[in-house]
Amino acid sequence: MITSINSYLTFAGNCREAMTFYQSCLGGELSFQTIGASPLSEKMPEKMKGYILQATLTRGSIRIMGSDMVGKEGLVKGNAVALMLNCSTEEEARNCYQRLVEGGTATHPLENSFWGALFGDLKDKYGNHWLLHFDKTQ
Figure 1: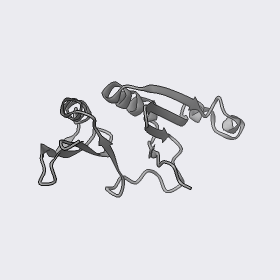
Figure 2: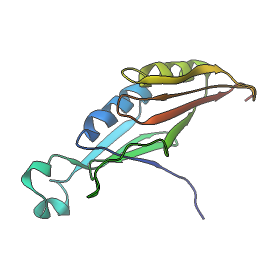
Figure 3: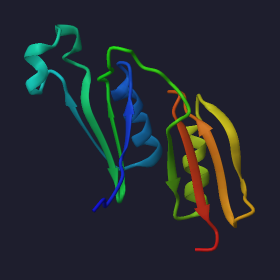
């Protein structure tokens, strides 16, 4: 039985920077495993040893994971994946939105939706899409 789904982001050498930015926006505990500190170290070029094999940002039930491990095709940015944050208060939604949109694009500013929620979306400075939601009826 599936119990949860984690968001997994791929970066092209700036995973540490991006995940540290997300931690400054969302809080939580952040851990990194570099390629150099992993069993892959012996098989990888020296220049890649500082790259992130896996990063994990955890705050309560939120878990965002990331890596600098890009396949042979390279990093292809698109809009097929977004991270949705279900916030516990309106203030939290507004604060997270303001922090995440810094250097990015406010594609849909937060507004009251027809379904009774505060909702908006944005593309952050790393090209990732975020949906922010606060259910006003909760």
